[in-house]
Image 1 (spheres, rainbow, N blue to C red):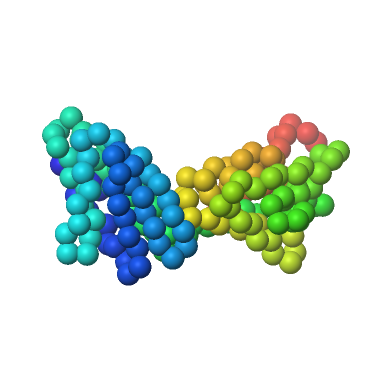
Image 2: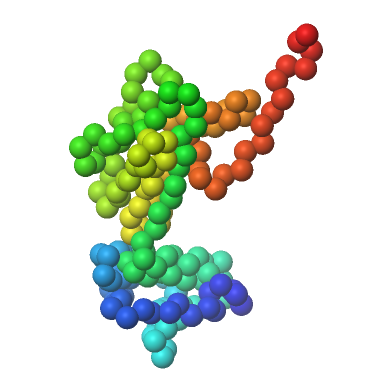
Length: 179
């Protein structure tokens, strides 16, 4: 039995969910999310919690996954999700252009304009070296953060580039033979 799949999902005040075919719709104070659920997994309400149950052992591999996706949707519509990125390097910075475009200056010959998808917001600190990406969809927030990091991955020798705020980097030594 899946340990994650067995855990009940707490249903906070003001959050409603409905299952329409194989799609669960979660509505809360921050918005509305739709999440596909595979065949053979049913969502039931038991004393203020959502419980994911599978029909047979054939769905064992996706039982925990389905429960985690629905739990992420419930947390997204109540608290939301966010990811912090640090921009490290001399002259490297980030700024907003309008409401839905982020402009990166990362040592290339040109600035990079990054359009934000719908449902995603970005906040930049006054030093222009930290950006916070937030939204209600955990997958979309993580994908936007990964795309921004891919613009200039952290260099292992100088540790310059775009990195997650909680990312630990191992700095490599340079050439050992140079005297």
